[in-house]
Image (tube, rainbow, N blue to C red; front, side, top):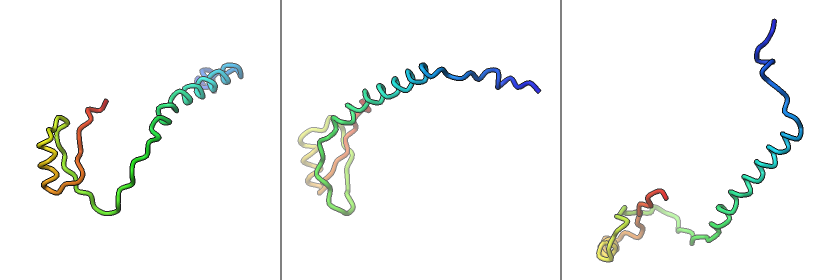
Length: 82
């Protein structure tokens, strides 16, 4: 029997394989600075249930004051995904 799959598979030369591996390492190294910039640590939250209120990204000082008067300590703001 003649297999067409075997005819389509060709071995990768060592030089091309090393180029592909080096390219993958370079791409990985380029993505690391994005992760390295996020080194500022937030203060840990105390344990327990957190109640949050979702408010507009264009909230005024009065909106925030009203939220505080309600006793809400945490708010969720939309980020727009950017």
